[in-house]
Image (cartoon, rainbow, N blue to C red; front, side, top):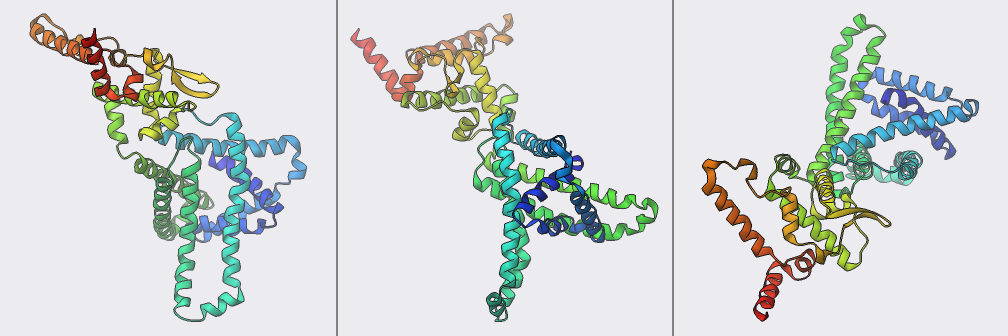
Length: 395
């Protein structure tokens, strides 16, 4: 996808930048990205820019322009699908949101990057700045800052990707940690790959002209791996217990499922009682600090048991019926699929154990009798139990 989309993406970017008169800066930025390839990187940059310059938008016509835009769209869409898979998001953006968000990335993203490089270049060439740089220690600080600035810009670019591309709420700190990690790995990989390119020059006699293509594909692969590693770091920074949560869910841990179901129902009930609009699964996941995939699976299960429903206007997850009509015992029974604990293991030789577990289930049912979602949210379990006992004594 990257190979097919690279030239069309750069062509669209070139057209956008040309409208603002900064299209000349696309070549040094691309050269910076391919710098680990050494002289071959400069050669590839020249060839790619040549392809981009040969794309005549006026000659392409409507079909050609649509093809360019669609190819660019496919690249961004593939990146979103990959990031959504990392963030355990099962539902991507709608077509309307894809159009607006992707268009913003295509139009605004290149302009911001080129503006940052342009401001950096203009500041460095300013006469007043040059005089200040001649004075020490400002000169040493400026040299250090100039060397550090590409890392800052790269960290900001990766952080932007991790913050806005996944179709879920990503904290800025998590996106920033992932961005800095990816930028560090990019720099280290670039240094290592540059050494590899120098050492592999002897293979040019074997592969001839294909050596450039092989090195380019290898660096392209390494670059994408670094981006995905940064996304994983951002995800686990925001959800440090994600692996454990996924393990508990996958291994049918009733205690975990019961707690997750009750926490979700309490959040949804509280919004219902406050008159707030219903939440989407990504918002619920952010509120309870759980991976989106686990929340979505639990929501689907509760919908299947008739406790929740998907609302259309406004869109979100809501209660199937008023919270005062949903007993807590029904929720726990639904999570266990209508079976008491250990039903599937019943055997004649374990009669004493079965009777003990039945007593436990009956005790739980009696302890929670009369407690509904509404009373749990408004009064808490102890207050609900106390009001129930008071009513029983009065009768």
